[in-house]
Image 1 (cartoon, protein in one colour):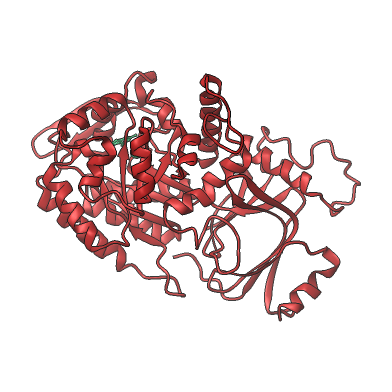
Image 2 (cartoon, protein in one colour):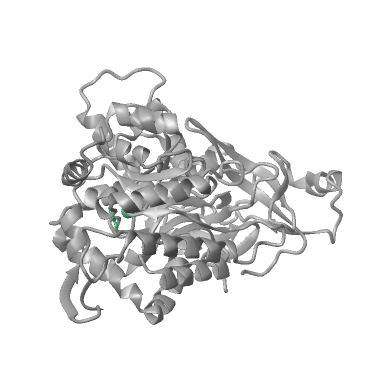
Length: 504
Ligand SMILES: O=c1[nH]c(=O)c2nc[nH]c2[nH]1
Ligand SMILES: [Zn+2]
């Protein structure tokens, strides 16, 4: 675990705080106090510099009771990103050409791996040709021990404070992933894939019983990890039937029965990503009226189910998903890379479906949520351009997603999908301080961001009062052309765990 925070931490400066699908707050002079347990003690929205000490005093904080971080011009604080769908074990597959050896009991598969071969393959071929061989390597715990720390670091440093991780089917390697996340102090859900059919012989579980057994063992292991000083767990287990195609009826039945006995443990899976996948699913489950109905029949569709993709969900399925209270992880980069299609996020929102964003590495080619936000924006614009329907006032269907909506999806929307909206996704009293300190100053070294210093008179008083429009401008520069270099500090539950200035 990262170092414990032992005194009140106070942050003073500009803050971006999401509120709803249509609104966020840009607060240029905000004061946030974080208790030693990492929760937000209180927030003052607008405090002028000369009244800072007085404001702290009113909350009973005298000098020596707190550590003050005062932001520089061009810096701001915002909630950390929530990635509702990422395959940690697929990061080694990102954009590389390499010879890869996969060992199974009897033979060595030697194959040329390249990401998407220029984007030729769609989902099912991509899984067989590239992804399953990549994931099979995690049978080797040495490999897992070597690669997972770098993968988690990379995710944290790109500003993701909560991740919903898929691991491989291997129990021991998945325990290693959970250990690494715990050690680094990230908030996360970690699941090992359940998959007992329609997968290559070197990468498939031998039976439904063994699949369930190792799932239960992983849950026990993760629930046994030490908690934060306030008794909260940061790493949670999640039941992870890979997708319907890779699970027998027996496995889905057993997982559904087991899930019923542990209603607080969430479930993640894939749904309706690709036409061929949907066709195959409906052939395998002839009694189901739709893809969503397959999961529903097996008691796997409920308020804490996270459904990856949902590109081709029908109206009936959207209605069923809303009724069950499940959420969707919108994975726009992956949907482009695998030529899956463009999810109708606006329509999902109008139906009342909970929606968050997912990088879906390595279907998605970047573990950064910023990149995913930009892809979600592009997707919504393409859906809007192609739309022939009338635009209705006050709805999202077929419209471009604006900055407020994209910010919501990447933060509060994700929190809602993870059933953690009461803890994370925005700043308010008693929520966890899961936050990013962002800079658009020139010294970040990101030339794509026209930063705070650009064109500014160096003799200008640096603390001249900013307006909320200045802050909104900095925020948009970061949102649409920022990258890891702009993410200076990453906090989870009040503890500094990453970012460019972190020396962990
Ligand atoms: O984008 C995807 N990535 C995967 O690993 C996967 N497995 C099932 N369906 C999937 N879709
Ligand atoms: Zn996925």
